[in-house]
Image 1 (cartoon, rainbow, N blue to C red):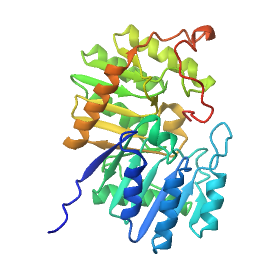
Image 2: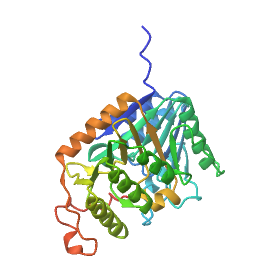
Image 3: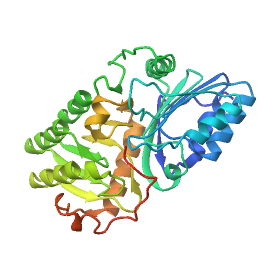
Length: 332
């Protein structure tokens, strides 16, 4: 009996699907793996890459060298991969940060994710990843990889459902929000862009029921607190319902429109994510993916509580009800 064909798109949900779902993708590879990551430290993933290399798979890895704050999370991984003979380079110097989290398997499938390949994001955070087997999508993710690998300029095809920074991500996110007619569900950690804020408020003013799941202060840098808290307070004044997710750390980036269309990927709602960094998102209308996104958002919404957003200018309020600080969990 022939194996069942893979669905055109598949959703990974963290932490429910865990590292095993990523290991399964790595283990599928027979000829090539192209990996571009902001942070790669999972021992299980590293061992899977080593095994893939040993069985003759061409493995190429690009790692972001440092965060915007200067932390060099990938130095040890970089050295280990090179010692194993795996082709590994730093991401393109054209971008101050490469925040993209992607993987291309045998030029047959591509993963576009919100999660890093680190254990924390397999066990403690709400995160998503879309696996696409659409040839046009896979070709574009691979082309973006090759351009950054070879330090050449990349002009993406904007018609295949991928959202690239710094190409057109702000405009495309705005257009997705503009299509909402009934409901707009947003699961994002920070809000640091006036254009997207205005689009969310416009949706509410035309009668769209808007829900926002945020993560409070947790993981947000001091310089982003002011904009994020102020934006949340402005949205609440216009009738947007805002809740803080606390049963899991908030790391997801999801916009779900009318339950029928979604955008997820690496980019935060953040000026630098739109204008400066290498980021990658994906749009989807796949019924199975949307159904799971709806179920996950509803589950998280029911577990969350209304967020009384602090005054950004009153630091004494900022820590109320927050999760313990984690220096290794930062929304870059």
